[in-house]
Image (cartoon, rainbow, N blue to C red; front, side):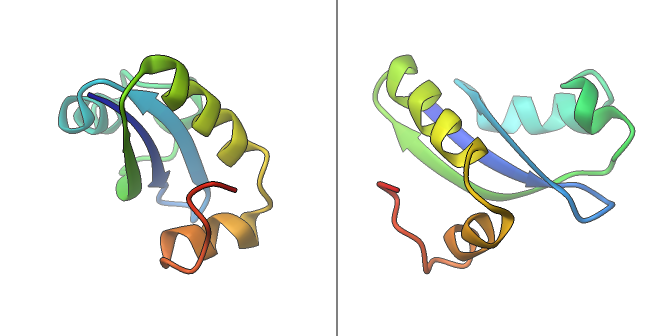
Length: 85
């Protein structure tokens, strides 16, 4: 399975990524071995994820979420957004 996810960093910013192992990836971010962006913003908290069938779908969804405005990401996290935005 492939996942697109959003992390909330300790400074309140949001980070979007994709992975095949959600639990392990969040652990790596919190150990400081994840993306450079999250290294100085630990701890991070998983606040949203979507399960997708293929890597290509996960990467497309990651791209779409990364291009959303913050308010749109917050709506998505709160369950008010469209998963197909």
